[in-house]
Image 1: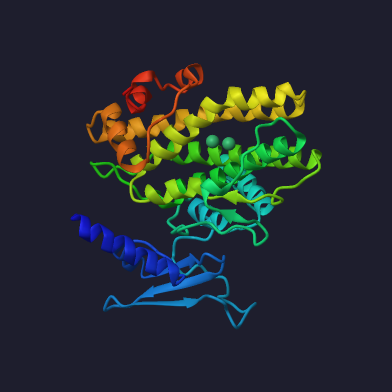
Image 2: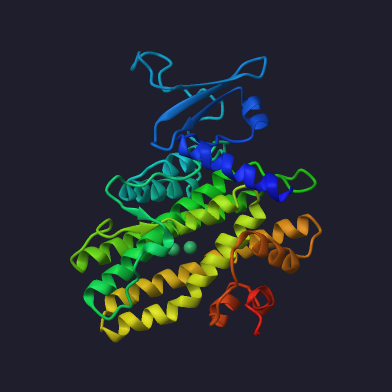
Length: 351
Ligand SMILES: [Fe+2]
Ligand SMILES: [Fe+2]
């Protein structure tokens, strides 16, 4: 695409967002379903109908005959009790407590085999946040260094924010890419969904552990402003599953492993062993998340007969701004299966 056209497309996207519009998904896929139930970004139901001549109509799905036969019926024909239905429901839930509870319940049901269908539902462009949570641009948040109680709370608060986005990112990868096919039209194996349901459950547990710890220190989640930096990476990779796995799970989540020793040391230096225990639990789980990202990235590259490491470098260079920063947690990355060949070539070259 020409530079001029890129600028024009970016300006149009900004204008559409400014009007409060929401991208619902590819027209071909929506037309094929004829009738699709969506969530708007404020959590309301919307029904999108495609008529025989290809015209789309959208209306809110509030039923004036509540309680009558047919109310609450699934208009998409996909089933209201599928994994993707719940993924989108959780993504559209602004209250973090409710998001955590729903996540743990859906994980329990999926793992018990009570919930079986994967389904096909379209996730929101950006998950809503609670009205009392101030969301700022990433550069405008002050990070604590852990030297005072206030600073420790600020650090835990910023980690809890990351975990809340991480819950959403797990459900988003499930819903957004549920219909991805490999080159020979093979759908994603069930294990893909098993892995990311487990990741979602871990992230919900992490949020809860941090939120409980923040309360024990005399504050609460929402007391400080947060950023939405992680969701910017989600938007950047919303059209390509491999780019999503590379940037979110193999760059950002691996970065979480790298910063763990320093964060842990700050709490340990203050004698805050309870927080250290929480951070260690998070770390153990995060190694498995990087491993899951790497497993599915490798699966997709092999299915496309493409070199995994060169493809990773190319996708990170296209979808992640800047270089990877040492020092790296070589041991944790190795445990996840990520050798130095994956990340050292992405470090800024010495000038
Ligand atoms: Fe986490
Ligand atoms: Fe994670």
